[in-house]
Image 1 (cartoon, rainbow, N blue to C red):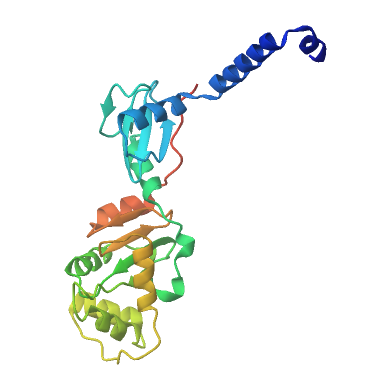
Image 2: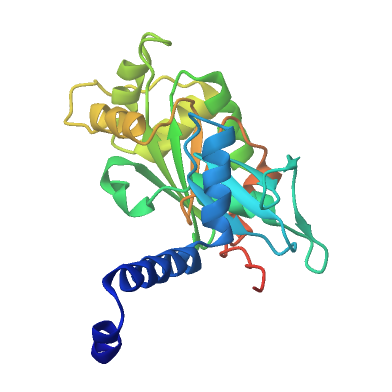
Length: 253
C-alpha cells in the first residue's frame, strides 16, 4: 500500500481515498438507517424510538414512545393495526407494546406496599391504587376472582382529585392488619379505626407513581414490567399474568 501511495499522483490518491470512505459509509447504512432518515424528512418533529424488521418480508415496525406502526422501507405505506402469528395465534403487536410500556420492577419498594398472598402466591402483581377511587374498588372486586398470586398494593391517593384519600390511605397503612383493613374498606366500606399518625411511605409512593408516569388509578404492573391502567377485568388480568413477552422474531436478512 505504501508503494502504491508513492507511485500515484497526489490528486488521484486523494480521490481513491474519498471513494473508499464513501463506500465504507454506504456499507454502514442499513435499511433501518435509511428508513429513519426518510421518516425524519417526511415527519419532522417526530422522535423515532426504534425501527426493527418484522417477520413479514419488507415490513418494518416503527415505534414512537409507546406507540407503533408498520411501514415499508420507503415509508410509502403506513399500516396501523396488529400482526398475529398464525401458527401460534400470538399477537405480536400486543407483545411488542407490552415491552415498550414496561418498567423495571426492581425499582418498586416492596416494603412500601401492602402484601397479599393468595393461593400458592407464585405469580406476582403490583397495583397502584387510591382508596377513594371507585374504579379501584371495582378492581378489587375483580381481584377476588384471581388466585395463586402475590399482590403488592401501593397506596396512591390522588388528594387533589379526591379530598380525604390521603387520610384514608394513612388510616389503612397504620392499621395493625393492613391487608384486612384494605379489604374491609375496598370491598365492604368498613372505615379503619386506626389513627393516621404512624410513619408511612404514602407520599413516597405518590412521588414514585409520578416519576413512573402513571396518571390513572388503578395502574397494574405485571411481573415482566408491563403496565395496564384502569379497571381491568379478572380474565384480562389472568391473560396478562400468564403471558410471556419474548423478544419479537426478526425477519431473516
